[in-house]
Length: 193
Length: 181
Image 1 (cartoon, chains in turn purple, brown):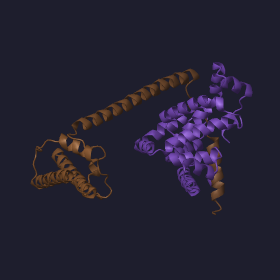
Image 2: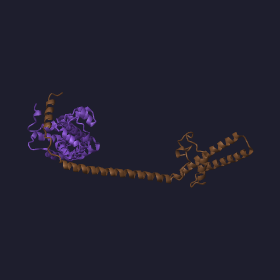
Image 3: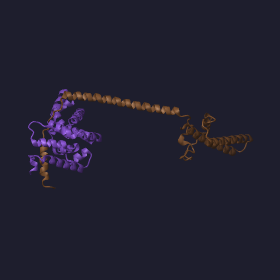
C-alpha cells in the first residue's frame, strides 16, 4: 500500500484547512507533501519535472480542498490528483517526445545517486538503477500496479488504453527489471526460488 | 503459466515496496506558496496576452472586411449576388431570384455607359439587348397610344422585364470580369 494513502489526517485539521486557515494548510502540507513528491518522482523519474508536477498537484489540491467531501482518506484523494497529473503528462505526445529527446542514460546515474539514502542495500541500489532505466510509461505502470495497488483495469482506464496494454507493459517491464538484477554477484532472493 | 514467474514477480514487488519513499524532500510550504503566487502571476500574464491576441485578430478581421467592402467596384442590385446571377456557370437559372425591374434599372443606370475594359462578346450582347429593349419600349408606347388589348401590353411588359433581367446579368458578369485580376 502507498504510504500517501496511509497518512492519517484529523478531521479537525482538514476542516480548518478547508476554511482557509493558513496554519492548518501548512500542517497539511507538512504531512502530505513528502509522500506526494516521492510518488510523483517515482512515476515520472526526472527531478525537475517531478517538482513541476508536484507544484501543480499541490495547487490543485488546495484549490479543490473546499469541495473534498471526506468520502475517502485525504491521502487517497491527493494520490488520485497526483497520478492523474503525471499520466496527463506521460500521455501527452508533445511531452512524451520531449522525454524521449532528453538524455536518459546520462541522467540515470545522477537520478539514482540522488535517490539513494544511507543504509541502502546493494539489491535496492540495483533496483533503483533498473527502475530508472525503464521507459516512463512502463515505470509508471510498474509503480502503479506493484506499489500503489492499482488493477490492470484501472491502469488501462487511466492511460486511455486497453487492459492488455497494461498487462503487456508490466510483463515487459518485469522482464527488463529481472535482466538488470540477475547478473549481480548476489542475486536477489526472489530469483532463487 | 510458468511456475517460476509468480514467485519472481512477488519478490520484485516486495523489493519495489521496500524502496525508501522519500530521498529528496520537496521544498517547504513557504517556497510552495511563493511558487504558486509566481505561477498565478504568470498565468494572469498569459491570459492577458491571449486576450490581446484575440483582440488583434478581431481587429484585423474587421479591417479585412472593411477593405474588401470598400475595394468592391460595384455591388449588384439587392437580391442579386455573384452566385445569384442567372446564367452564371454552374448555376441553375431557375434557382436564381429575379431582381425587381425598377431596382435593376436603377442599378443599370449607375453603371458607366462604357466599361473600362470592353470585351467584344459581351459588348455585342449588351448592344443587342439594349436595342431589343428600345424596340419593346417603342412597341409599348405605340400599343398604349392605340389603346390595344391589355393582354398585349402585359406580354410586352413581361418581355421588357425579361430583357432587362438578362441585361443586368450580362452587365454584372462584365463588371465582375473587369474587377477580377
